[in-house]
Each structure stands twice: as structure tokens, then as C-alpha cells.
Image (tube, rainbow, N blue to C red):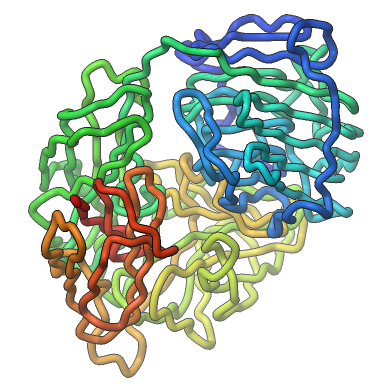
Length: 609
């Protein structure tokens, strides 16, 4: 649970926008809907044709146990085992949130205060049987998933999970049924209540929503309506329409420059290839719409711009847009890259644009995402906890010699600070590379110089701080745009910050060239890649510069964003025969080669047989 100590503006969860509210029909006892697409719901508390009958299907000990869940985190993805129809698209994998929900393709953390479902705020594509402040770090909590032998039913079970701080017990499950495309929530046990109760502080949310969060069905929010309170023996079924005439025209920026469009660092004088991935999130084919890309300096002046026309995109497909020419920065400082789609008749503008924070640096450098000298926005945790930032250095190898953190504590409080490898769950903080102890007193920037610097040769690293003392210290935050989306939080385990889209965490990394290295290794760039022939029928040669014989990873993705082939090499070329990781012959069509796993640069490949 989070404390807001002192702020210039309070952060709250707003009621649904009018655009979302229009999709919500008044709820009635025992049933609700339809939403705009046509989904309805019925529960076992009423007698009606098609109403579900509670029928618990135990999978604890039979299915696959989901490990890594703690207090406030997300793990996955996990396979559904089949293509499940959901709204106007299909899904085949899911993430599991420790706070009582799963999501299709969105690993953003939902944590207190919780949004009403549906709502455009991430995570989207959510099934929420009990989105509340649950805690897997105490008691005998576990989570399981199981797909039947016919590969047409998935069950995800939360077993014996307590509420954070207040205890209780919650055992419930989600059932996906492909034969009728229904979704069922079942509750075997429900005891206790969330911290601060059911009816205040956005402590609970039950419902479903689509990929944009703009369409869905709300079963319960903040204990309202009271007759929909979850209880032992309850079953709630969400039923799709037999058919739907609802047409959705919507495209958006899936990501730009990096995963989740997170902030990046560029070395002064190095080459950057601006790119963005565009996704058709509607249910109608789209083509020929413009995609804009531009770079601004800190003064807000546009210093780079390009416009591309998207090709044909079927519903659910992703296209990679590579802007030209490449950009070579000549001065250090803060820049932003913006990618934006412009589709006539686009129905949901919230996903049309992504703004990526870029910091141009030279070593030695102070890697930072905020620009504050002092801050009046401070956060602390009701229980032990901490914060951190994820960094991808612009050149390897480098060393992290120290860190800076803005913090405050009364009375003085000692905290653990350190640098962590990115080998944790889901690429999160893992092994501790170096660490120290910091004594925090008055509100100020604190500098820590590590006795043993951490040498980084590839990938990302994290710099973080953890306190074992409840409510102390408070950590500085910055709400000034651009926002990096690289913040992480610690509440018995690490997870992307619940406020990653709202503020940056005042933690910096002090980085320099590793000693004894005459020349930094610049992460390989697509400026040196050739693919011939392309399109190809049977084989193509992928050639690239790799003068230091680094171990490189190349991945091939299909138009749905699924990785179908991975190459690891220390050479400078690969021959690809158009087959996937399992040796299967891939279908004709457009694929994307991801060359640099951190900067996420893409090139298009086309198979035509």
C-alpha cells in the first residue's frame, strides 16, 4: 500500500470518461449488459435462461503452478493452449497480476488505487474476477493454470490469497471456454475485506474489458452495486453475442524506439534509426494512413521529421515503420521522439501517439529521467518497500560507479541501495551486482559511490533502493513530461511501477567507460544490415556488422507480434530458410527482424513462395 506524503497535486482514479460511460448499461440484479459489442453477463444469484450454476473445478496440484507472484507484480506470459475468441479478435496467451486479474498481451501492473473496469488506463484487455490489493507473499497463497486435453478450456485459479494487511482468504478461478466463447468467474471462498474496506479508495474492481479499455462490462466497483459482492458459491458468466455488427476503425502506436516506448539513452555522435510499430486494434482492414515521426529538442523545436504511409493491416496485425534518414545527435541533452498515426474515422484517439524520452550523453554520464533540483512530490510505503529505475546504457561495456537518489526521512533511516542485473523474473531486477547502505535524513539528493563498480557488458541494469522500515523514507517523484515509463517498485518483489505512465522516480545512475577498455562497443545498428533477397522464396542472407564478435540475438516476429524464430550468433551473417523455431515452414507474408533486443530496431522481411 502506497502513501502520498506531500504533493502539489493529488493522484486519484477518475470516474470513467464520457466515452467509456456511454458503453455501460445500467446494471440489474442477476444480469447486465450488453456492452457496445454485445457481451452480457449473468450470475448464479438469479434464475434466468442461461444463468451459470456454480461448479468448482479444482486444479491446484493438477495444473501448472505459476511462480514469481508476490505483493503487487505481474508474471507471464503463459499459453492459453488454443485461440480464444474475445471481442473481435482472438488471444492465445495471458499475463497474471498478483492483484486478482489476468490480461491478454498487457503486462502493466494494476495496483491500488484500482481503476473501474472498463477504463482506457492500462492494463487493458483485462479479465478481473477480484482486482484488489492481494498479497502472495504471506500465507499459503498459490496460483495455477490448466488447459484440458481437448484444448478448448483454460482455468486459472487463485488459491488461498489474502488481502494485503487485513488478511482474510480468497479462492477463485477464471474459466475460458472455446466451444461457446464464454468467460466464467467462480468464487470458492471469500473472507475478509480489502485494506480500507470495500466502498472507499477504489479498493476493488470486477469485470471485463477489450484491448483499448473502452468497451466492457462492469460487475462491481468499490462494492457497488452491493448485490454483486463476491461470495462463496458465486459464478458469473460473461456471454458474447452470437454475432455483432459493431465496426471498429482503430489503429495506434504499439511501441516506439523500445519496449513499451520506454525512455532511452543515445551516445552523442552515434546513429539512431527512428522506428515505431503500428497495430490495427479495430475489426476492419485498414491501409494507406499516414504515420508521422518527429524529434524535438528540449526547447520544443522540431529538428527531425518524416512521414510514412502504412501498408495493408488486417485486424490485430502489426506493421513496423522505419523512418528515414537516420538521426545523428551532435549535442547532449533532453530530446523526445513522437510517433503518431492519423486514420480517418479513428474511434479511439488515446492510442494514436507515443512520446519517447531520449537523453543524449557522453561518458562519464549521469543517466537520469527527471530534471529536478528539488521535489515536493514524495512517496513512501505503508510496509517495507522501495523504488528503482531501469537503464539501458548507450554503449557497452560500461561501469556503474555510483547513484543519486532524492529522499527524505524523519527520523533518520538506513536503506539498502544497489545495482541489479536484468536476469530477474520477466527481465526485471535479479542478481545484485554491487550495493551499499545509505542513511537518509532531510529531503535532499544523496550521492552513493560504490566501492566496487558494476560492469555492464550487455542488456539493461537497474538501480534501486529498498527500505525495511514502514513509511520511511519517502522517495522523490517528478511528474514533468516527458515520462520515461522506466520506473519500478519493490513490495517484497520487483515490478514495473504502477505509476510508470504518471511520474519518473528520482534515481540516477553514474556511468563511465569500463577501465582498460580502449573503445566502447556501440550496440549494433540496422544501418549496417542487409537482407538479400527480400522478398525471398526459399532462403535469404542477413548480413550485419559485428567487428568485436559479440554474441548477438536476432528474432523474427510475425504480423501478430509473436516471436517465431530466434538466432544467436557471434558472426556477421545468417542464412534463414523461412522456418520457425520448431522447424515448421512459415506461411507466406510479412515478418519483422528484431536485431537489437534493447533498442528493439526492426526490419521487414517478406516470404513469397
